[in-house]
Length: 445
Image (tube, rainbow, N blue to C red):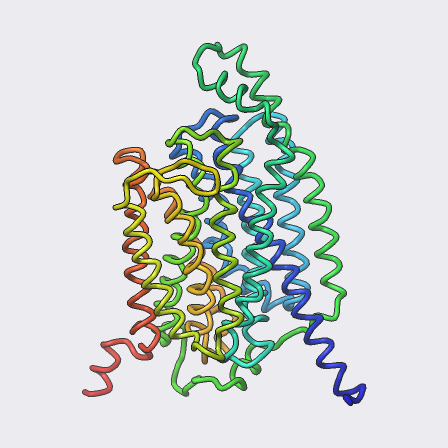
């Protein structure tokens, strides 16, 4: 039997993983409701499809702007206090939704979304190294998959809960009336005001919960980690003579891989309701499609937990999933025929878009450990750089919206193809590049 001294670290390890899993659940709940907010704000704030994707832009551009400041903050105040500040910022963003809804001002909503994204940038910059460092690096993808299960469970549940809170069965008639063009501005305004104010109570409650969670984690058993020494000790490639982040090519290539992966993932989820709308489905019917995609993602994560590293290495999984993602994204743009699945009659391409959730699950989990390995004292800033890659979530939906408005919504999904082509490159070759070409020339010279 285990002694108390031997069992305490094990118990604290499991408790720490549990706290991190709870954090990833919250990340998922707060992030994936955007798939409902995009079409909801499009109706309530009278936006074009392109304008509606500024929801994703405002939310995720914060990751790009705030990732390096987040790394500096964590270096200054420590990981646990930094996590508390991250939750406070996220709560502030939720509270900003209250005046935004009262005035029905899309710009104020965007400010709130930017605040939420800023808080999550701090939280993700802290949480990802924790997951990587809490155990052996070779099973990091497995731990990431566990976190992914919690993240995507929240992603499946949260949009349906928000939809249940802000949408009603009789709204189909209301949306049809608003879209009919028979109402003048004076008649339409009170209908839209009433519709948008349904978000006030859910987001006010969310803000309070986020504050409580932040304070709770600050005083929890989650250990304060020293990434500088621990990453070096965990089988690192931290070779002497590396003076800055620029001396780690695979880190920069990994950041671009994360840009492509998360961008492709958010395009597949956040645009799908609008795409379903182009097939004649209203928001009341199409609200389930993001959850279909995230269910496929969940299946991917569960597969990862079972298969990695016992049957498949995380590198092999990355190659397989990147290739599958490329094939499915080609299917989305090339398949143009009707099918009936899960009680919905739609173009086959939308179900292939759902299926993209499966390979997307394990790509992020595979890229992160390969990109952050062996950074030693550069781990915090390297993590910040990878978090900056999450701005793919901000950029690619806008690119999709721009292309979709000009070439059609299905053709807009061509933006996915180069993303997966690059991911195949990173999985096969990119992660192996430890010297820039010009450094080899210098060395040979």
